[in-house]
Image 1 (cartoon, helix red, strand yellow):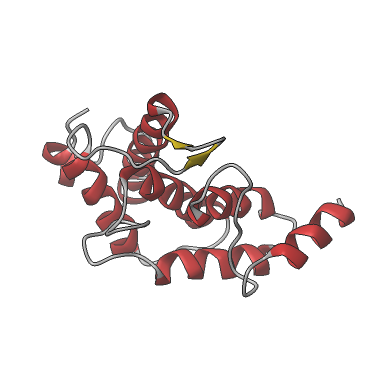
Image 2: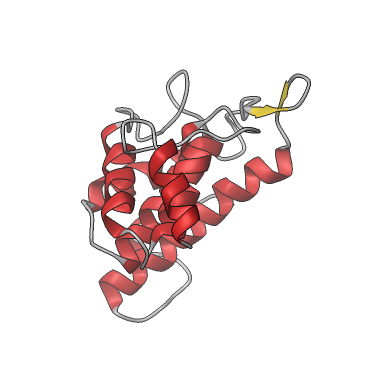
Length: 162
């Protein structure tokens, strides 16, 4: 575990985010890093969460060229994990990310951010990032608001079009 943590600290860009060998988006690696750092190095996980928060676009998205649904999904997954397991973050950040996903689901095409011999987009993986982030948000919001799990947060139910 010490070896892995040393590697993560050494490879953190500006001590706050990571890049992956197969994905050009820092949100893929950083969102997953937040989850993996819980209970191990929550300071480093907190810096990663702060970096994600600070890079959110005005439209609620994260990512290249105004944001993409897939990158927003990875960012929101990391933040939701941090919010529920480590420390509460500003709910407006989460709400704005969710609203971007609910507005763009099935409409905005995902960008090719995966690398092989050329850039490509595995649509099923991209959609799973989007759908799981939207589901997790709805579940977290309900638990936060109602203190009981439910399928969707009533205040924004009409925005979900899965």
